[in-house]
Image (cartoon, rainbow, N blue to C red; front, side):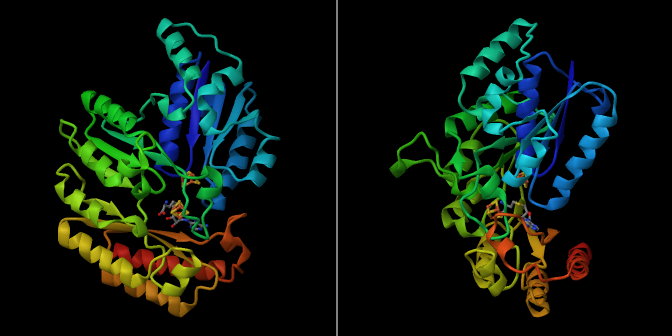
Amino acid sequence: MKYYVVTYGCQMNLSDSERIAAVLGSMRYKPAEEISEADLIVINACSVRQPAIDRIYGLVEKLKKNKKEITTILAGCILKKDENKFSKIFDYVFNIKDLPNWPKILKKPAIHKIHDRENFAQLRNSNNYFDVTPKYSNKFSANVPIMTGCNNFCSYCVVPHTRGREISRPAKEVITEIKNLIKKGYKKIWLIGQNVNSYKDPSTGSGQAINFPKLLKMVNDISGEFVLNFTTSHPKDFSDELIETMVKCKKLSTDLNLPIQSGDDEVLKRMNRPYTVLQYKNLVKKIRKALPNIRLSTDIIVGFPGETKKQFNNTVKTLKEIGYGVAFINKYSPREGTAAAKMKDDVAWAEKKRREKILINLVNKK
Ligand code: SAH
Ligand code: SF4
Ligand code: F3S
């Protein structure tokens, strides 16, 4: 019996898929090279933009045409309305937080190897899906989740609705996972979460809780040669303590993603991003002064509800001023249940495409 995992979305979903693969491997499944060979197919969904959801319907239709008998599982970030529709076409719709229970639910735990049996027992007894040791998909670079969920509720974003509130992972677990990776020869470690800057070790009292800067330093101090990265960080939580710590972390990568989303104060306010362009620029100044080699990248949304040409031009101006190495440009698409979905999506698609192209040309020119 073979399995295949299709992953949409961000590094967080990639990491979850590696844990899904480990659980399926602890059952009677072997990885399939091609989706067409698989008996069990897991689709790990992303709901940030509609096209990635639409593609799932097409994919399932294609799979069903294939005569082979297959079991289909949907997991990942899914909105309630889609969940109801998907539950009619998938055999199972699973929550990633239930991952340790998947084998029980799938009712096919035909375990044939002793070490798999041990692994299976261990999985069943854990109440945290981060306890599952991932089947890493890359031999040099690994994603290590330090938290999941988000409390920020940017008005356009589904993540707080699909992933729920922030939950941090105990620092001890994070450190153990990374030490094992370094022992295996990994050269690049990514600390990942939707909002890594608000990390707080749940196993320590609130007074002395290990925060993100402290965790970063602890990881940096693990012996061995490796490059340390983190993503994603919200500008509002990028503290002086973090900048000071970054200076001390010699293993830290020179790449830093700092999503600005818009270069206009009015739009930022409607996005529920609690900073002004000036505050963001001052933060960049501070970071660059402390870390002169840093290469910044950013995320932008064009065509947010009510974004005028003038407001868009402020984004153009801001991008020019800051000078990013890379910018990920996204055309706004309304997501059900978010605050922005109640605003009028009044920038025409063609205009969103035009704005997107202007920004892509601007960043690619350099
Ligand atoms: N936690 C990250 C973002 C995760 S979503 C952060 O705060 O930066 C990744 C990117 O998708 C966002 O940065 C945003 O630019 C884009 N995005 C999110 N919702 C969107 C929407 N409704 N329409 C278009 N782009 C969106
Ligand atoms: Fe979404 Fe904002 Fe949270 Fe990022 S910080 S995941 S954009 S709500
Ligand atoms: Fe998408 Fe979920 Fe990541 S909605 S961007 S896969 S956190």
